[in-house]
Length: 182
Image (tube, rainbow, N blue to C red):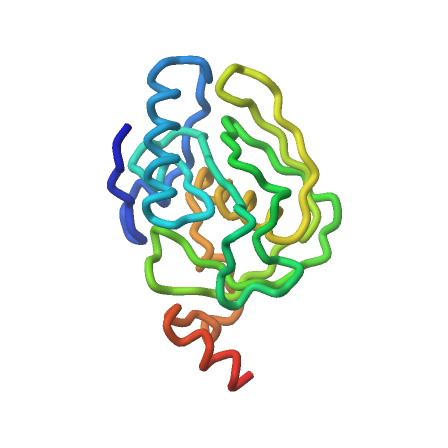
């Protein structure tokens, strides 16, 4: 396994749609996923999409370990056990309730910043795992947010393009001050 270089905002790989994976069971996909998981954990991320490591394929990994708490997340959005370490290949998202829920998002490709993003709070996602098995889950709150955030990368989007108020794009180090002033 290896820790991969993470593409940063502005790199062309982050603005292109990723290609479908024809064979999730291929050795190179398994190797990519192992490296992505190691990279995500090393960077203390909640998720990682293949384009973020310069591979334009429709692959995401994500997790929400119980011990993690990010500043700025509401109690409903805090990491929980409903999103175990998941590998999702060729994912699709279905919005179950379009009512938006706002939350602070960060991204390994936009280091040091957080932005307030509104997304549907209730979704169903479906994809394929490493053995070709179908994975389908219903998600709410942070679980739904991280899946949508990672799948946006597969369509060439960063969270900042979903922001409606750029005055709510702040440095992570300033989030406590921002919240105190709100």
